[in-house]
Image (cartoon, rainbow, N blue to C red; front, side):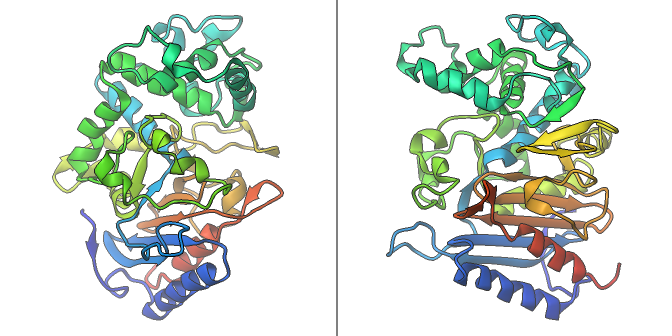
Length: 389
């Protein structure tokens, strides 16, 4: 199944409810919740809703946002990096239950021999948290020009950060808690680079983006695509994504830039159990493993909150007890899965309802260090619009 445009009726969705969703999106812009927003919803492979609101940049003379606008995905990058790793698992080059030290030998220290590859995919490595690691990086100063021992497929900024991620202390026994970790995903991206022999950007482009026709998606965004990037106001939560240097930095945890349509294709590939049209990216078995709860009974810590069960797959958040700070209670099914990104991006799939949801926004407001988004409202409205469930 490939995505195609169609009517709400073709998708088994109420046309009246769809019009209300379109109107509600404009209200979120008018209220100042977002200066820019692209929403997309597809069911049974039919895109029945796709709208763009607001402007491309904060400038007064900025053009209106187009449907093909490119957004910095921030942490929505993580399931893409996870997919790269799982491709190497399928290739017989990477083992989920093998020690991280087998692939990054310099990852040494007390208790660190217990960290397995799957712990990186589920945020259960037990390493010191990102704020501690990043404070060390900032304290030492970010002088990337002094690095002289780079491999041909390495990026200096990624190399620099990785040194601190590699040296980070193990503060918990692996598997005890889920604690959301950018450092763990950086290590995962480094494994992809070392095992594949290619940069993360080149590997993902060759194995995922090009086969799927995701022409607006890259870890390193070329100059011709940078002009389509939707920019945040200065000092907004996602303003770091405005930086040209960041657009050209292949961060495994936050570096991908993409359009709503491209990420809908990526999501539909998962709903199709690894296929998209005539292209097979993943095995259905791999998709099943990535999208089911791999952490039954494992507690989670997330932005200061604790949850009785993490409910996390291999790279994807799975809807159950733990929903994070953006989503809250949902009408989505318990087997739905997805991911969000700081700055305002969300991709969510519900295989039970054959539903795909994309909410790409520019986040400008926070309350008690939490983003103010309407993604949960959008998702619930779309689910409630289904008529033939």
